[in-house]
Length: 108
Image (cartoon, rainbow, N blue to C red):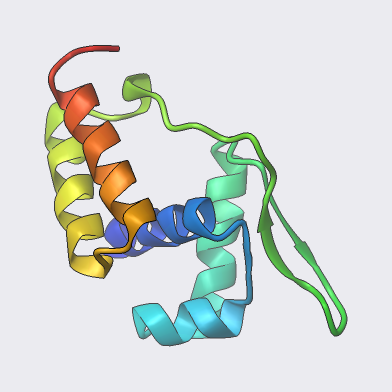
């Protein structure tokens, strides 16, 4: 379950490049401390995420950032698609789902 939340956090940051730990914690129903652990893990894996403090601070995904098929097995991609489909049906999420379909077809 923890990995699904971490991927959900990454996808949310890919959709909105800046947010707060409080918003993510509320959305994924975990503590802010857990969000910071996920951010640290993603950063350790090479995802360009950083945090800023203060009134306009937050968690920021440095752009451009792209997911590559090399990072995922077919089963992981299928799980990822199912996860994001459950998050929302906004145009950005639909676009991400289409890109995952493209990867699943072996086009990369």
